[in-house]
Picture 1 (cartoon, rainbow, N blue to C red):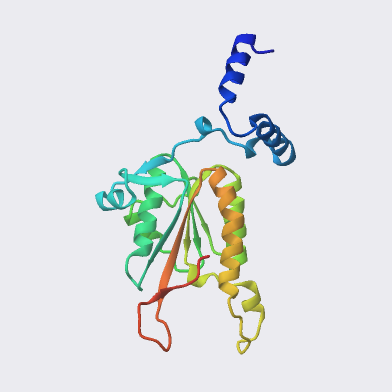
Picture 2 (spheres, helix red, strand yellow; picture 1 turned 90 degrees about the vertical axis):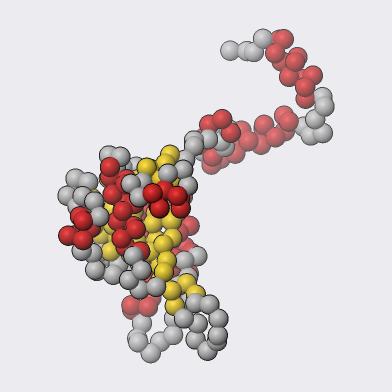
Length: 226
């Protein structure tokens, strides 16, 4: 249906003050939609606001702002051993469950304690929670992508980055050097997983650990996550 002539003339009058040809930009955007999909070009009024999951912990609500966890986002929890990273992650998962969402836990460290998780308020029944124990880092990201693609999982916690061993490292001998293998795997995995997770409203929580820098005096460092 054609637009009224009055509206078209008013639009042309407004466009006279522009220093660029808006029709060429519209044509380029239309071709972009045809080439890579209708949902690739987003109008500002179509952007959705971050939905916040209310937290029962005032401290977590203050840290994340707005009283709860925004969804979808990537969260990295890091600190020294026994600092409470898993406790915080399980509390966030429990917050998601209280809003009626399904959550998952990728246990790369093979140390998940169901009784401890239930104390934090996490429901570990199979209709509300899934536990994955991958054999290597690549398997962990495969599980993350498969779960996020369903559009039914709202939060996935990964424990931990340090335990995500690349397949190349597992297949190699102990004496072989695998420089940067973890960083490359994490970079590639995050690039593949996050786009899918974001489109399906799935928050990812990565637990990370602190390591000391060898041969220098200075602050501790994180294992590579990018």
